[in-house]
Length: 451
Image (cartoon, rainbow, N blue to C red; front, side, top):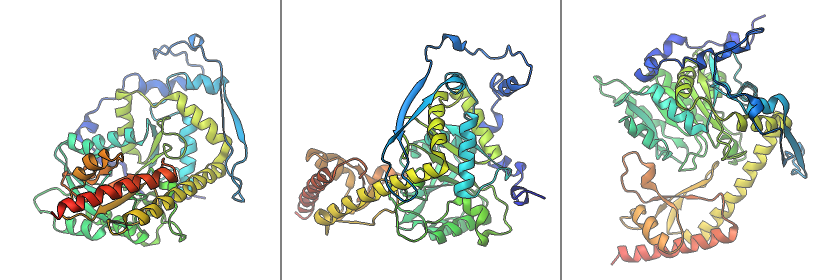
């Protein structure tokens, strides 16, 4: 009987050839790393790699404690659990490892994608671990875009990708976004009116959950329309989703990821899967300092990313991967998901505290929509002719409060009245004081603007 994955129609490997950049196509394989998998051949004596002898490593075991995940009845974790890394697991963590990530962790994340997004192995996708999702994003951009290529960019956009596109001299085509996520009207108009003598963009970059900086989460209808446009105009979707597990929005059912939708959504029936390159991160839910992210998507693109890793930084850290896997394995999928629900609840409470303070201090002085995911508020200063850069960088800083002016999130760097404020760290008392200071700053700027 055929497996569920084997019945899924998927795009052919050759489909991706035009999407790969010249750099990706020309990149030579690592002469050593391309042969490392052969070391697992039974009975083989390898003289291949210059691996240090593990007997010279001073570490004998690593032990740490971690919170037990909340129980199924919603009660918070009441104790810590001890996790020990030793023996073969520690030995693997102290040595060079596979380019795409340690096999147990790759398998764990792959099974997570099946459990959360309904994606079975054998559907033409692969998964690679990186040194944070930013590492994988940068390599994906190099693998897909040539210098001067046009790229569709949700705007305002995560400031961290603007330099990546800029370094390739890409033409960043801004697609408007609002409180419901990326605007499909803007995307459709851009593509329908694209010059006939110019190649259409082959990539759309978007953050569908808790979009940085706006905090907006794309609605189900918007996501469906984006997928339909991707098929109609033949582009790939780079789904950057570090806030997926921080969704704390409306009580209505959360919309699925693009990675899930391209397989499961009945409105997309009859279309092959393989247009979504998804980026996940554990930075916001386990540890930012561990620097672990993972990309899931078409196998030819993941191979191009891995080829870059093999020549750039060889691999993500073996040790942090083993530590992460030890914890995740101890928790299991149910424990992990319970932990993420607890984390999202924590940030929902933080969001509510921050919005209450905004209502107290900034009503009539700013406009905003409450985020449904992520760590940020995006708000517009109601100051005639306001340029948030001058207000935030100078006047607000002088009063002892620091935020980011919206201009850093706009590919063309134009002036804007918008500001991004992170609410993840401050206590309620600190939030109240920060917004009092911001209120005073805005009042002074309004007075100056009317004189």
